[in-house]
Image (cartoon, rainbow, N blue to C red; front, side, top):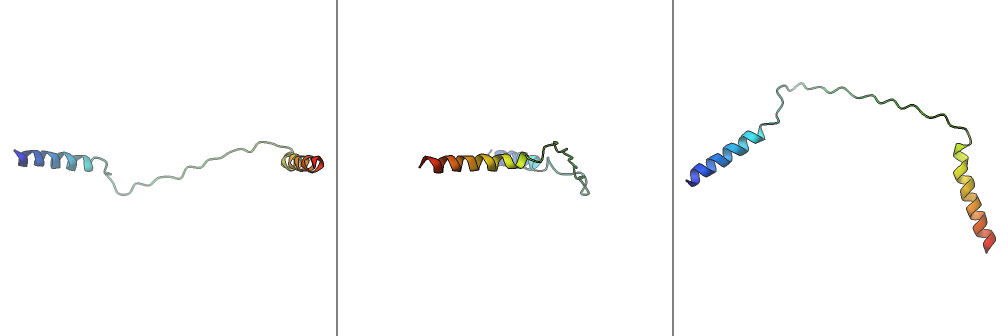
Length: 64
């Protein structure tokens, strides 16, 4: 009885191990090209954060 149970367990695990195999070995995946369009922004958009940081530092210095 133990041999029958062991044989059924081995048969079940062997069949599920081969379930995901490929039929062909020459599977080629094409690369996906993603094109993102940049938003139009003004040229002063990169200076806002440094100006805010400078204002915070100036406020901190003036308090002391």
